[in-house]
Image 1 (cartoon, rainbow, N blue to C red):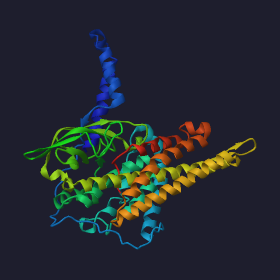
Image 2 (cartoon, rainbow, N blue to C red; image 1 turned 90 degrees about the vertical axis):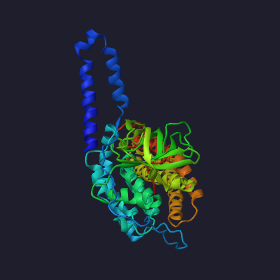
Image 3 (cartoon, rainbow, N blue to C red; image 1 turned 180 degrees about the vertical axis):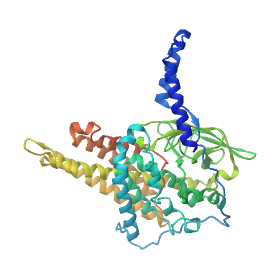
Image 4 (cartoon, rainbow, N blue to C red; image 1 turned 60 degrees about the vertical axis):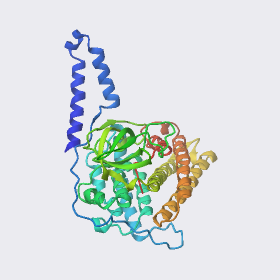
Length: 440
């Protein structure tokens, strides 16, 4: 109930300021210019508001030890053929993306938020359940990084921004399953297996040139009762609605660490942060000002290897998303160049056009291969740092290249919003700069 009230209050505030800006009273008082500036700033940047008035997280059961998913079986073969279960999941998600995300994408991009009810319908797919062990109410029996990659790819084929919005809660639940202690799992995971899955976000990104996730500017210092966080996280998906965040911060004397922050914590405020792409994800800034956290808010004991794995699995998620959107570009431009005629024949008969389309297909297959190989090694508990680095590099470089080629192949049509390639190009630009938000 808190998030709708907050949005209503923000809307009423803008409405009141707009009426005030046009009144004759402030004209006589000489205040028209300051008020108009305030309205302009509020419309452009959004007002900082308190975090979503979320539910009270509390333990539904006592756990003797944290529940973990076992590594997947090592078959000794690298086989990209999905299992029957994976194929069924991918078909379901692909159908949802085509019927729900793709038609809603343009409107979400314009309005900076998903249509009413869409994310609730997405939660009914049970995406979070796959990564939660059966003893905690989920359906997971082993690590499913490959399945998560296939799901991310299928969702991004519908729309990358909305895919990030859909996947944001599962990033938090996956981190809790993999690294949370028994108390953290008991407090938070029950909410992710119910009918009303909370909006949540993994917040690593900061607005810094050449941002290094291993050197966050957000600071955490010890206090007698736990920790205090100060800093600003950027491009956080569904920030205004999120009830729970996993936030990276530099813990004094220890280096980067992860903390569980509830939106109801004092000192947590949200500011809208519209971006060039991912606009359907409703990104925002998360302001942390003297946020007091208990000792139990530290995730994974602050271990450096856990933080490194979170960064790697997040980058792997972005590579999977890039593959999905790149496939959308390819699927769109092939019929376009075959049907579009110039000088009496389809433009695909031109060698430059045909080679450009072929390049998209080649780079896409390379990206998918490396991404799924990294996912396969990760879920089997094998070293996968090299594969993630390759996937990240290919996704950042070739993803942007594919988006640009898609716009170019449509000519003037690629520059207008009548066709979705301009949106996909803007979204694919995010792959090279985003950290966090998703986690496989």
